[in-house]
Length: 176
Image 1 (tube, helix red, strand yellow):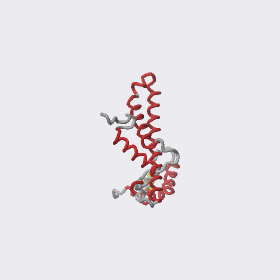
Image 2 (image 1 turned 45 degrees about the horizontal axis):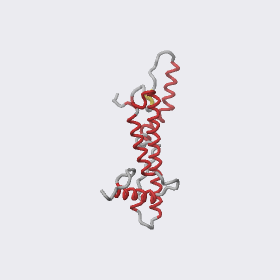
Image 3 (image 1 turned 45 degrees about the vertical axis):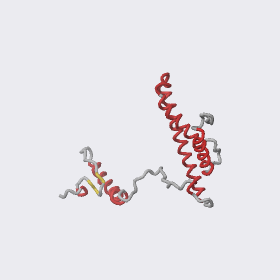
Image 4 (image 1 turned 120 degrees about the vertical axis):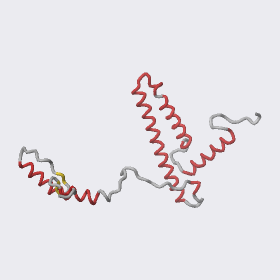
């Protein structure tokens, strides 16, 4: 006999039948019948379907990154719309990340009990920094968010920081 697995006596069309237990001869007949019924289906799946199937997670929709609003022409409304849609998706992702970080911190506090403030401090610091960054990027934009308004907010913040230092530290005195 050759070393091919399909020629083994305990394999029918790719269906591997159970080893005969010796309890009942009807079991052996049923295993042969199952091999005849399901064997061709298993063979088609293993030789045709699986090799030609793409391996990816079905729940992850991969969307290409579109140009940002500063890369769009002034009269290109479609490009600006795509940039706004990309910004909305990014905001949703960042909001979900923030929600996950908050949930991790709350779970840690519940799990640790009275020592939660001390033991969960690193998680709290990460959450606070993420919340600050989220507010810096999307805060005060309102519900009708557009990529142009968000870009203008970033430009204004950069100009403020160039002239006066980090936001929240107050204005520089020119007398110094």
